Length: 393
Ligand SMILES: Cc1ncc(COP(=O)(O)O)c(C=O)c1O
Image (cartoon, rainbow, N blue to C red):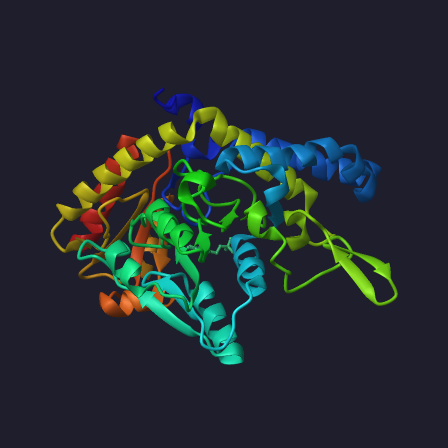
């Protein structure tokens, strides 16, 4: 069913005053998310933090069920953490790697992930190898198939890179990983909430996500999915008395579920807000959300590409709601600042955020305009008109 945009905007009051194209940074939270968060903070102040958490115990349990439903997992496969980086790091640092192993990744891999590869590489001595792209910009599956041998122990790629508009073929990569029994870690930070995600269809072993981006949840919330079949093989890099039980003077036992990747202290207001955001996204339907986002982004790319002096830098046969571009006569940072003065939000993505991709394509800072289903065709036109003006000045 088509998204009821008027309702979505009513439930996102800031849209009346703000043109928000920074959904890949942090989307605007809808009223129900904010209400749940504020209500829990109030209860903490009224009855005490521990008491409020106990009171909300069943609703916190429901958050796991909602996320499991969102991605087609079971509740025991979900860990709630504070952001996508923690989710990804907890997963990556728990994967046993040895000298001589090979780790395959993508050209547009996110900076934090790559820094972690480099750190562990220095400690262990495995090789990090970048899967080439097809001429259209996504991961080349044939090249990936040719790279696989018995020494490849991990495929870790980003589903939707931080800029570039691209959607990598996650499920096709999953098929190859499964065929060869290779652990597959998917960074779904920018894809969860903007398109349907089904971990069984994708075939990943581990998936990391954040709350504040396309899910429209609170800042400081995120989750990790760990496939139950590999859970017992993974020991998280950090443990506490929530992740494990201290059972004898010289012994601890890990939790049997994905919560071994969590720790004890939590921002429960944010977790409840995340659950509300997931329920809210499910109530719209992820296929309908994706359809509207794709249409808005395609319209935006088309309009921007028609402006003299503007180059859209997006790649990939399959694209999403993230639109990246450069303006010949203006720095990306200046464009974002000038738009901000006109109550228009977008962001700047620097080469350092996806260094290999930026070097390969000689990209400078790019402007990143990311649309959501609550944005409108009129906003797309207004945004493009502002860029046309700025491109001339
Ligand atoms: C592809 C990708 N992965 C991971 C992250 C990190 O997410 P978080 O800030 O929630 O840790 C980002 C943030 O922009 C991202 O774009």
